[in-house]
Image (tube, rainbow, N blue to C red; front, side):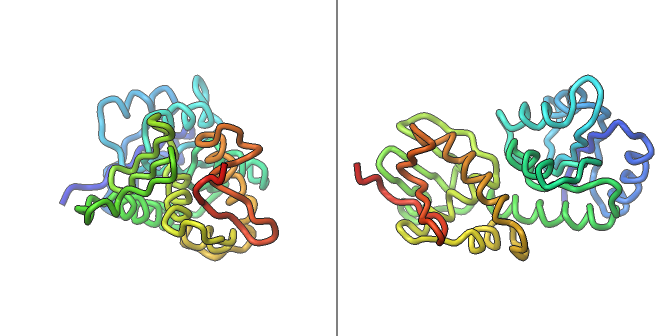
Length: 236
């Protein structure tokens, strides 16, 4: 069986050495980079299953690297940072990260998060032959292809992060049904809701910015105040 490949990007060499031991013992193949520019170079020549990305680094920091990676790639990204405020976490998630881990951290917890992200990524990207057109969910000029993992608006390919795609797919599969933020969070993040409301709202806002003509007056992803969100065919 091919080893899953993790790209670790952090300028703190002690952390890199420590995680190298842990991930190697867990059976992963670990690639190491010390800034965002080196990470992008690795991605040009290696197939990477997951990226662990530090925020504060020289040359190209984690924020810039994450945004650049998300222009073309969908693999899970876990951000590491000593900045642990809610706003820091929300910002990290809003620019394309799938998880956010504060420093200092327990390596075993990080490994658990890596395994969880990889399970979800492989689940959503698993190839399976569709029956008829069940893999294509169409709403006027919005098309969600769950087999190719693509979203198109009026024929234009829209690049969504894995979380964003998972939310849109969930809403599309329940067309017209209102899903609460707790239902969305539990399904997409696969963990207890707790204070996940802000996280869901940030991701929905990013989806709207990408698929709606006017994000402030959404046609597709509609808010039902006090309840949650639904995706439905536009009425006008």
